Amino acid sequence: MRIRGATAIATALVLFTSSARADGTLPFSGTYIGLNAGAAWGSSGYSTNPGCVPDNANGVFCEQPPDPSAANGTAVAASGTGDLSSSGFTGGVQGGYNWQNGNVVYGGEGDFGAFDLSASASPTGLFPSVFAGTSYVLGESMSTSWLATLRGRLGYTVLPDLLLYATGGLALTDFTFSSSYSDNANNGIVFGGTGFGEGSEVKVGWVVGGGGEWLLDGRWSIKAEYLYLDFGSMNVAVPTSNSPAFTQTMFVEADLSAQVARVGINYRP
Image: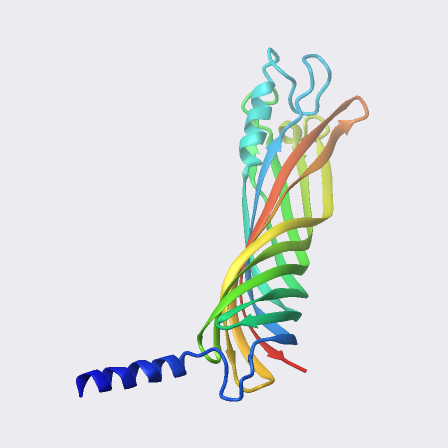
């Protein structure tokens, strides 16, 4: 009796975890389209090269050693190194195609939508050397507005209507980073220096993640997924001057990475 009972349980489990339905269909195969919405968290690390000019070359706030104003450049570089963190809404449309072979599901998916990230900071400092005591302010700002990904998906149906999957591929976004500089030139004794620069690029990066999709019926399904995205970095030039005779160019390198958690709904025509 125990053997018969164990056999019956095993048979029931096999039938329950079978990837095909009773009518023989493979429920996750084919084309689908849908909508998604969720939250995004972004991080943009930045570092500043003050662009100190050669000694005796009339820089705005720093010249290279042995000029003592090189210490001002070190101070600006330290103030101009940090990280901008942001969070915002993400949501849009997706579409893809799956093939199902038994419990294994594989295919591709593309999506496009809002990617609302923005953050800014205004670090300050004092010159330690020439014009000692002069205060300066840096302005750092980042933003994105849209996100597109093109990913492969590979998953396994742990239940007939429940797919768990891993995903990865390409990601694109519009990344804008701006940087500014100003000082009060020893409390206004001489003209202060000012500068501004901005970079805006469509960045191509990579994305990895995973999720789960639950089939509600033959046409509709809901999903939840997590994605990690990395878009590399870009360089921004910040021309700075306090008169035509005193100029230098700072350079800011800024990177961008993000995490996305979202839910969605798909329809299979």
